[in-house]
Every structure is written in structure tokens, then in C-alpha cells.
Length: 241
Image 1 (cartoon, rainbow, N blue to C red):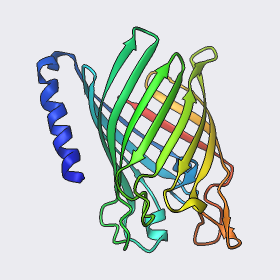
Image 2: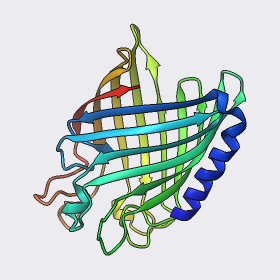
Image 3: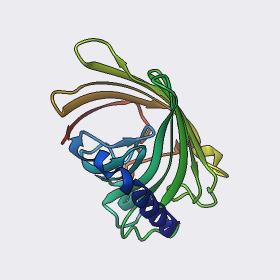
């Protein structure tokens, strides 16, 4: 699958050559009081540093993004970073009203050394109508280290509203189905507020989940027994350049 992703990335890049005059290369760097993904803390409620790079040409795009993490080491592995690599295509179905986004995303955990690999590859498709986006992501590998979890899915609905003076409010709800591991399936919710100050984007996000308890303990749990899906607020700042 990793080889297939690289082949797709190369094909997309080659396809973009005729429209290189319209190509863009963008970078971002930032940090957060913790790294949450789909409502679950990936950094054990500790601060995380993050950054990425994106290339686009016409509707094609390629990118990579990375963050510091703690959950792999907490699970007995040896990875301190997550590296995401993705490629896809965006286009319009109806001008200025309905658009789509399809692609593939691979979550890499270099030197993880876990018995069940946490490396995860998903294909995804999204439709955006006005401020709202409906997206479905489907795992074509095991999902984040869960054994026998291929064909898991994540469905989410999000929106983004400018409430004045460039302040953006983004509500979100998502459902993570973990195939053949139903106790770990859950719904997550978030509400983010952000503002772009000439590339510098601070944000404040409220997260919550309805993760289950298993045998008296939390489904997603830290080494000290804390619920990694508990309600919390994350302060983050990112600079785009």
C-alpha cells in the first residue's frame, strides 16, 4: 500500500506538469497544548509541535504533515512522531456551490516497533456545499493498530462560518467505526474558533467524545488510567507561509 501511495503521488505530480504555471507550494508550522485527532488525544494531553507542506496544481494536490505524539510509546512502541502523506484531486460539480475532494492518506509512524502495525491507509471522498462538508474515510489497512480492523470507516460532517471580523467558527461531528472492534467505535464532537492574522492563525477548540468503558476502564486510556477521549479545550497556533 505504501508503494501504491508513492506511485499515485508520482502519477499526480506528472499529471500536474502541463499546468505548472498554476502550481502553488505552501508550508505551515505550529503547535498545540495537545494533539487531538478524531477527538482522541494523541499526545497524552501534552503539548505537540506540528508542521506540513502542500503542493497543488490545478485540482491536484500532494502533501505531508507531521506531529509529535506519545501514544505509540505509551503502547510499548518507539515512535515519537506521526507523519501523514496524502494525495488527491479537488474539483467543482456546480460552480461556486458544490465541490468534491477525493484522495488517499497514509498515516506513518517511523520505527514504531509494535506487534500490530499502527500504520494506516485510508481512501476518502468529500462533498462541500456552501459552508458544510460531508466526508467519508475508509481504511484499506488495519486502523491505528487495531487487529482485524481493515474496512473501518469514519464519517464526519463539518462546517465553517465567518461570524464577523474574520473570526471563523467551525462545528464538527464525526463517527468512527472500528471494524470487528465495536467497543472502540465512538462519536466525537468539536467546536473551533479561529482567526487569521496575515498567516498567523490562533485557534481554540472544544472536544468531546462518547467513548465507552470496557471492563471498568476507558476504551482509549493513558498509562495512568485517564480517558484520552475526555472533554477538553485545546489552544493551538499555526503560521502559514
